[in-house]
Image (cartoon, rainbow, N blue to C red; front, side, top):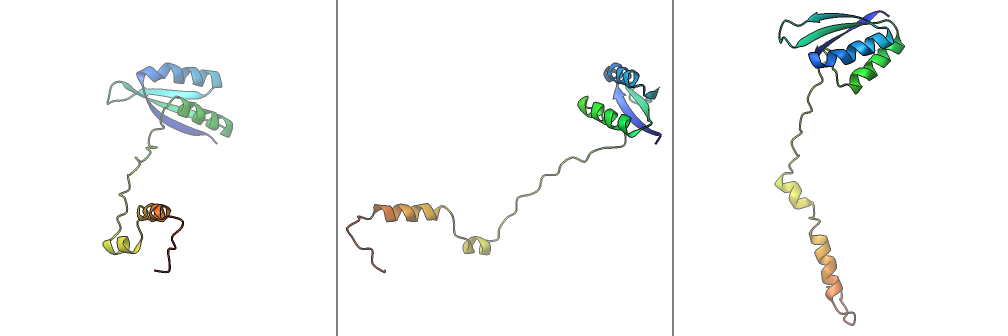
Length: 115
């Protein structure tokens, strides 16, 4: 497994990434990006699965993204609207506490009766 991971990083992140690569003995190639001038392209040569996992953990911890691995932005779902027919069929929960309050107001001595 000899894969390369391509990163595009800002100039301020370069020292952290280079220190990590030197500590873990990961080969890397660095090239300046054509546009914008502040970005640099890193190719990390990952040789085994342990190094790949360790690199992934490092990238996530330092909020660095792999180039070409753009995550889609979450899409807000519109709330589901009920039709008028469904609203009429379902009882409103606000009415239930009012009915219970009415029953509590009646004196205990009176019979409610059937109707």
